[in-house]
Structure formats: structure tokens, C-alpha cells
Length: 417
Image (cartoon, rainbow, N blue to C red; front, side, top):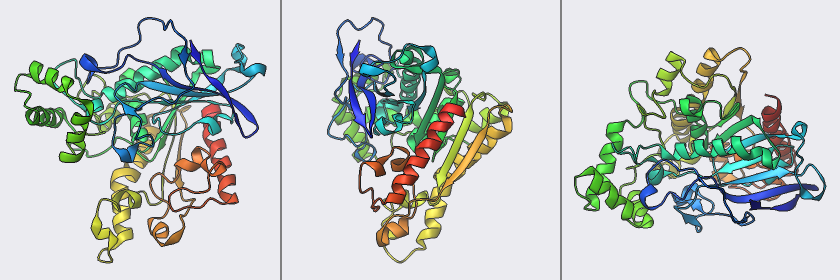
């Protein structure tokens, strides 16, 4: 049992449930392992009114950097109130469409006022989510296994919160969008969702080889084990890595070696038997869904500008590099994923593509960066309605109207396809 609370959102009431556990804490012997379902009903009343921990991750990727933990496999739910007294309707005709976000850092309460249920999912990332070994207890890709278990939890339980488990849309931006594309590719995600939204990202890279293969992933794990003097025997060094303090393990990876571990899936595995190109060629992916995909006009600017100091000078053609950087990493993979999906999808599986050009930032730096990676997110979640500012942008009345329009588009897709 979970005790949430009812909140007021723009003259609407929304039931909010925070930090609902969907798996056992992935700590100790369960570090690097696939998530384990909670096998016994929770006997105590869970206080679901307090924000839970974010999974350990780089500060740039979390708005909750001071509240992180390995014990983080929880989800949040925002559900519109459909009857008096803050209670849910048990009438199946009143069950609402469900939208599951593959990123935990955004508040879904405003979006929920559009007559849908919003779920945000915590999942392991970085070394905790993608460390790979030959041992079946550390198979790699466990961050995606986390999301799959959360989707199974939603499928089994969301009716208790007023949600329709036959009308589930998964969506995400950036790494969340990569995750969505992976669920489209994974045979283990079949039947867990019915529609999908890709916002700036898809796992569709080099035709010759994946971004990370098993040899790459195992090599990085061995480097990590060597650094911590964990020995050469795989059983021993895996036990050694599991006994390390989580922050020590993460900080070595994050600050000393930079790119040892990845947000990219490891292919030729049970969860991802094929790369995207091979899966499309063999038509072995989850085709019986509807898809909405898109990208911003200058994806690469906000991604490249912090990484390359030369862009802070006048010695390079910035706009051309921004276009190139964004095309390679975001725009082309997203566009091609949608195009290839449209070619093999059944006739009833409609596919939609958008380019996002709204929301030019203020000031000289904002003008240079343009409508870049992530600049769609505040509009999708209604931020202009509750805030005055977001990264070089002061929101106007027009921004508020556009945000309302975008939220309607997103939620209409979840309702009607």
C-alpha cells in the first residue's frame, strides 16, 4: 500500500505518488545484476509523498545531485483525480492513458492535467547500469533491464491508480529517447507499450560496428578492476568491485577515465541480440506500435559548446560545426530510425516526424546556440506556466500558449495515436 497526496495544479487536482519501489535495492551482491522484483507484498504502508533518491550519475544529468543513492529503483506517478475526495474511479471506462517517461528528473504533474497518467522511472546509468562481464550476474545493460521491470510493474499495477494498461506510451528526450529506441529494438520489451515518442535521440549509429561491443565493454571493466587491484580472476574481481564504496567507484570512472563506461547498449546480448541496422533488416523489432519522433533545428550547439574550447573563440565556423555535431549524434539517427521504422511497420502503425524550431533563446550566447538539444523539454512539461526562465530564455505569454499546445499534441498522441 502507498500513501500519496493530492495536489492542486492550475485549478485541477492531481494525485501524486513519489518514490514507489519497483525492484529490490540493487546493492551489495545485486550491484551490476539485473533488477530483482519485490517478491513479497509490502506489509507496511509506504509514504509516497517524499521525493526519493536519484540514481548515481554525472551532475550534468541530474537535477537532484544532492540526493543520490544506489538504492534508487523507484518510480513516480501523477494521476488526474476523476472522482470526489481524491479517490480513483474503479470503472474501467474511466481508465486513463498512461505515459511513461524514461527519465526521472522531470515533474509530470502539469502534463497529468491533460487527462493522462504520467509515470517517471528511475534506472541505473553509467558504471552501475552498463558495466559488463562474462558472468551472468553482471550481464551489462542492466539500466535497460531496470526500465523493462518498471514497465512490467506499470502493466500490472497502473489500473490501481486509474490507468489503462492497454494504452501505454513510452517517451523520453536525449538519453531517454535512446532508451525508448532500445525498447523498440528489444524482444524483451514486446507488449509492454503501445506507442513511443523519440525526442532527439535513437540508437542507430555506425553500420560497420556498434558504438560498444562486448569486447569494448569487457576491456573497460578489466581496466576498472585493475585500477582497484581486484585481481585477474573474474569471480574475485567482480566481488571486489561490488564491495567498493559506490562514490569511490563512480568518481574514478567519472573524473579519472572519462569515457570508460557508456550510456550505449551492448549488443549481441540476450536483451539486444542485434544492432538497429540488423534488426531493421531482419524486421526483428517491436513493429506493432505507433511512433512520434523528432529533433530540434540545431541539436549540436548546446552539446558541442561546452566540450570544445575553440568554439568560445572566433577561429572556427561555429554554426557549421554545430550542425555537423548534431547531425551525427542526434538528428540523423532520429530521422533514419523513424524512416526505417515507417518502411517496415504495419499500415495501422502510424509514424510521425517533427522538427522543433520554436523557442529561440535570448541574448548573444542564446542566439548563437539557437533552438538546441533539450530546448523542447520545458514546453513538453509545462515549465513556462510555472517559471519565468530556462537557460538563456525568459518565457513570454506566447511561450505559455505554445507549451499548452505542445502538451496537447503529446497527450493526444498518447490518447489517440
